[in-house]
Structure formats: structure tokens, C-alpha cells
Image (cartoon, rainbow, N blue to C red; front, side):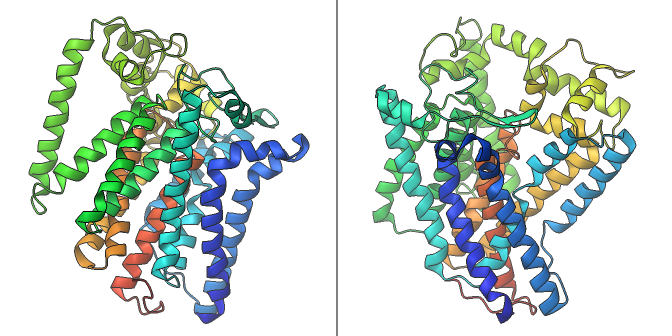
Length: 468
């Protein structure tokens, strides 16, 4: 195992470098000539996959085996599903490759992080956490300057579009879909800005659990600031999800550590009651679209409860897909879906023999309800594979939290126990698994969780734990 140690250290260095680079990618791409911006955009993925392949070769050649993870089973199931979905639906297209790649591109980071943890000291792991918090503070500062409409800040932070044939990397700032008053920091996109701050929120919430009480006040100040600026992202699904994980953290786990089911019921009923009250008082309000009329993010968030908004999103948007999409898939191609090419799947879904689709909706709104999009592309088998990933890692987080007394281990467990519900909820409002910010940090943290489990489980094929 010593022979692969040279590889592990650069792997973790690259994980941290990308953790710093990705928040600034939108503005750094402007430094490259237009003809090589695509290469610069794809370079992080190329590096990650190269290091992953090197890790596989080194481990297999030195040990003759591959250390199994809780991700392997669901990933194999998903790979088989994709193969048969492509084969049966005959979607051998560039669109299929781009769509599958968008979903899987950062999974190698999981394995790099898991194996890296076995060779890392406590301070090396905490460096990643500190880097994220420092960048979050910088983003809040830049967001404040954007709110104050400092002109040079907007000019510097203006993102650039990256074109690759018929496919492009854009943002809601460039497309004109940015809500008036929303901030986007260095990300060039308000949703990615909200996602990064959500990651920082999870880190702070997990950190509070493992530090002494007299040092928590600073964390609470940062948490409050982050919650406010998640609000300024105007991403309603992230605003609701942020407050949900607060409830999840402080009610679900602290009321009773043993009786999980009653606490889950208590949290669910409490949230349902709050939403019911808000719905009752907000449904008759006349709230405008924030893309056209500036209003604060609280009023904008209340818009989802209005009758007018509900009618619009049912006819043209997410609510319609959420209700009608699954029924159409189940009655036509329940197991493998309509194939991973978005355009072909969209056309086949709308032209299915047995359909519940009542109106023509944009493709973009179908992918916004990403749990439904997964079902449409990959069927029930693909959807089950991704739910299985979340469930297995959530159970692993509970196990690590129960078995380990090392503060760093417990913090990593807490991160996973908060990040997984956040991803699960956010999938109803955006393509979290495909977003570079959301998915990169997600796989890093789950990989660290797997590495922690190896260390406390004393796998005979692996070196002794050096963490903590």
C-alpha cells in the first residue's frame, strides 16, 4: 500500500484545489482565450478521471483487489440500467453522453476522497472545511457589494458562456432569468451561489455539534448571515431546504436520539402545519414574478403558495411534471424509461400511446423536477439506484455517528446526515446531482464518510487509521 501513497497525497491536494477553483470558475474562465475556454471548462473533470483511473490501476496491481464501498452496488445497478435503456431505446447520441456524464462526472471524487482519508492527518481534512468557510465569507462580502449595486463588482463578476457545439454552459444571469435583487457572487449563477452557501451552512451546523459551547457564538453569527444570503439567491427550493435541515438537525436528532420514527413524524407534522398556515394566508396574494418586478426574497418565497402561481406551474412547469410525468412513464416504460437523451425522451414522453401529459411544457421545467427526470430517463430501476445511494449513505452516517467518539469522524457523519436530506429535497426543484457545486462537494463528503467507516471498521486490506 505504500507504493500508492504518492498518488493519494496529490489526490487530496487536487480535491482541495478544485474545492477552491470551482466557486471562482465562472470568472476565471474569462482569462482564457475563447477558443480554449471549453478545454479549461472540462479540465477539472479530465484531471479527476485521470487520477481515478490511476488509483484503480495502482490498487489492483498492488493488492489484486478493489476495496468495496457502499456506493458500488447502486452504481452497478445504475450502470446496467443505463446500458439497457440506451440499447432498447436506441439513443446512441451525443445528447445521451452529455446527459449521463453530467450525472456521473464527479463520482470519482468519492473514491479519491475515501482512499485519501486513510493517509491524512486531522489538520489536512479540516483544511478543506476551513477553505469552504473562508470562501463562503468572501461570497457573502461580494454579495453585500452586489446588493449595494457597486458597479465595478458587477463588471468583474459578470460570467462568460462556454459553447461546445450545440451544447453550452450558461447561467441564469446570462440568460436573463435572474431575479431582480438576487446576488450571484463569483458563480455567475444565483442557484450555484445558494448551493455553495448551503454547503457552508451544513459544515457550520456539523461543526457546532463537536466544539465547546463557548466557541459556538461565532458559528451562529455565520449561520444567520448564510441563511440571509441563501435568501438573496432567490432559490426558493434552497431557502425551504435550508430551514428544513435546521429543523431536521435540532428536532429530529435532539428531541430523542433513539426514537427516530416518532421524531420524523413530529418534524413532518410541524412543517406541514406551518406550510398549511402560510398557504391559507398567502394563496390569494397577488405576487409578481421577481424576474420582472423587484421584491424581497420573503415575498418571492410566498409566491409558491398563491393560487395563480400554482395554476401556472401545473400547466407549464414543475407541478405538472411532478403529477403527470411519473404516471406516463409507469404506463409506458416503467423499468428503463425513455432513454438518457433529454430531447428524445421529451418527445417520446409527449407522444406516448398512453399519456397523462395534459399540456406541452418546456424541457427545462421537466429537468427542474429532477427526481421525475431520472424516472423519465432511466425508469424505476434508475430512480431506485439513486434513492439507494442516498439511503445507504444515510444509514452509514448514522452508524459512524454511533460508533465513533472522534470529533472529526462525528462531524463528517453529521455533514452526510444533513447533506443527504438537502440533496433529496432540492431534487424536486433543480438538477442538484448535475450541478458542479452541489455534486462535487456531495461526493467529496460521502467519500470521506466511507473512508471514516473503513478506519473504524479496521478493514484488514487497508492501512491503520491515521485520522484524529
